Length: 182
Ligand SMILES: [Zn+2]
Ligand SMILES: [Zn+2]
Image: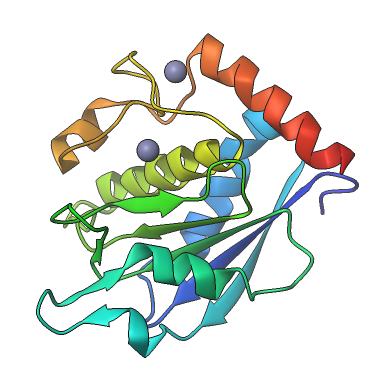
């Protein structure tokens, strides 16, 4: 239990996400290194039909963020996790999307799935950590090993670490302080 700490809602959207409970545990453990006491709560939510593009066979990431803004549950941050593939206008796909300095983020595991369970889990932790970084005001980082570096492909995801570089870790702490003061 995160006494006075950060509460993150992890919202399973649509079909069951493999290994969700393990993801929840790993995320809490990983984020505590940077954010202090963290509680990650599990929620479930339907995928909004209007967010689906028949032509693309994908969901519009921004529309999922809108749906997540209706999730209450007293959370500082709300992260959607879905098996469905996501897109943003002008892009073939996105691994995730977040509201910069906002409350909501969403990550798709569709392109992160792997036969190697460990690899899959570590990819998901990296992408959720990345999108959460955006919600604390962080932009993309030039350091290719930093979790805030931009990933074009899943190879980029595998290449980067789950950790924030020193500069991003500092900026994250400032963002966290702003968030907890509110
Ligand atoms: Zn990003
Ligand atoms: Zn960085």
